[in-house]
Every structure is written in structure tokens, then in C-alpha cells.
Length: 156
Image 1: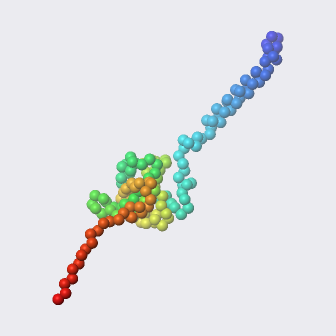
Image 2: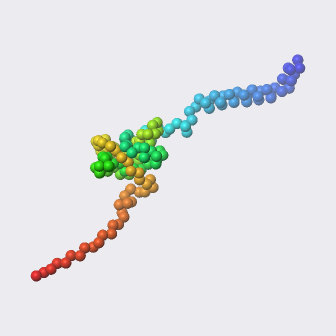
Image 3: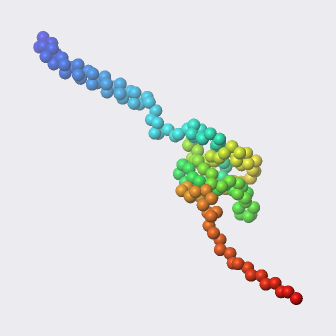
């Protein structure tokens, strides 16, 4: 009888305690079942701009590139063997993206027309890292000083 009297006197405390325990259990259960959006990688195929494609690249110098860039970088893409002096530039200032599910693989974000040219190339691909902040063609505007030539014509 004494317990019933105490329960009646403290009924509001018992109800508050019950609600608090219920909220804590529900909160813990729903927090664990939801996937944390920060921990999962961004799905790259959902952020490709219109008119562009992602071209997977097998870079011969991927270990060197991997040690220099984090998730993406701006590169010049070369094809051929640089040791033999037979490499040629395929593309300039393209965005290289690290694969979110395999950090040892890369893909290039290029316009659709350029993807055809890259896919036609056979052989080894090499990447050369460019400055992200530099504007395209900025290096092309550097004036080159040339010597003026003087020509002397003799008449008889």
C-alpha cells in the first residue's frame, strides 16, 4: 500500500522517466540504421556536367600521380613511351578524378568529342600535373624575345 501511495504522488516523474527512456531507445535505433552521408563516397556519375563524360584511364605513372594529388587534379595527358622519346600530347588541362571505390584508378572528365580521340589511342598513358588555379592558355601569352635579323643587299 505504501508503494501505491508513493507511485501516485510521483506519477509525473514516472511518466517523464518512461518518455525519456523511450526517446533514447528510438533515437539510438534510428541513428544506427541510417547511413551517414559523410562516410560514403560521392557517386561521381551523378555530378558529370552535360556534354562531358568520364573516361577511365590506365596511367603508367599512376603511383607518382597518386602520391601527389588527393581526389582530383588538372593534367596534360600523353600517350606513348617517354623513355624512347615517342610520346605525344593527347589532351591539355583536363580534370583527373580519383576513383572513389578504388583509389589506385583514375578517370578523366572530358568533353564527348575528346573522349573519342582518347579511346582511339593505344599504348601507354602518362599524366603531367598542371596548376589548378592557372587559366587555360595563360602560358601561351608569354612573349618570346627574338633577335631582329638585318639583311644587307648589294647592288652592282
